[in-house]
Image (cartoon, rainbow, N blue to C red):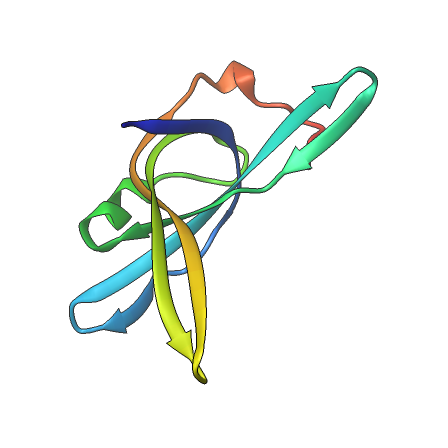
Amino acid sequence: MSLTLTGTVYHIGDVEVKSERFRKQEIVLMQVEKNGDREFKNYPKFEFANGNIDKLTGLSKGDVVTISYNIKGNRYEHNGIEKFSLALQGWKVEKQAEDHYQDDIF
């Protein structure tokens, strides 16, 4: 199953080196959803890992992109308590036409 989401680049984090074999970089998009006369902003965060980090090269705040991603859920224990985490793991980025950019959303 291929999941995609389109939004405006709000933030691109630095590359984080977690180990000799694992590094990641985060990107946050902003989506503006309208419901009647009300406006809601949504800020989904995606993680790109290892070889997929290169796909973020050349992107800037304000670019409109579509990200293809997988949902990754993990179970772990911390201090004897079972916990769960969820990540949106990106694997493809497509830059959209510049005319989609909304100047006033930041």
